[in-house]
Amino acid sequence: MKKKESNRHWDGHGKIMIDRRAVKEYLSLIGERELPLNLFEVTDMEDSFPIERVNRVLNQKITSTDNFE
Image 1: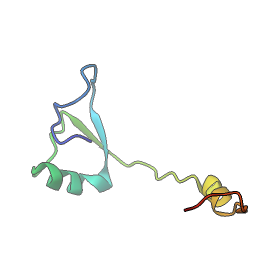
Image 2: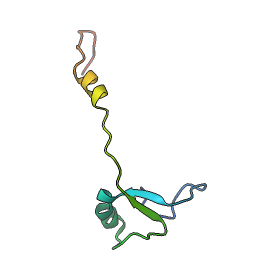
Image 3: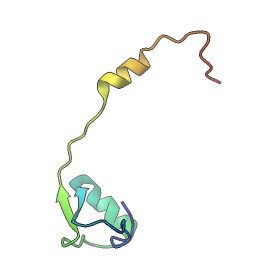
């Protein structure tokens, strides 16, 4: 998310989707009181965590050839 809504990719178009939980912090970062609703769409985004992949990485057997310095 960029601080200036107009500072987007030259080919960017459409509304910027922002998670409802991030609105307050985003507004404090850009120094505004409210979102311009013509530029933003406030949405409820689902949290998605790669639990299986994280478990695989955390449970890997470490061998003596691994270099973790």
